[in-house]
Length: 65
Image (cartoon, rainbow, N blue to C red; front, side, top):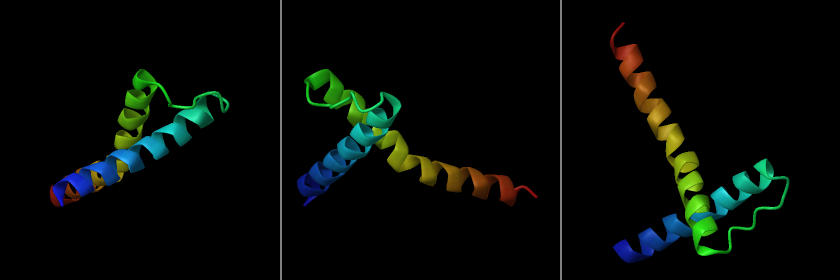
């Protein structure tokens, strides 16, 4: 089950990363080679986990008031 979840998150992060990097490069980024695959997964992971980090930061900020 853990393997399936890793594959799903990896593929989802790759698709999101290819989309974001494609927007930034004017559609030239395809994410097919090994190096480009890694960049797409890294960018997609940041986009996937950014809302969780923002919520945690907001909770920390509001708990101090």
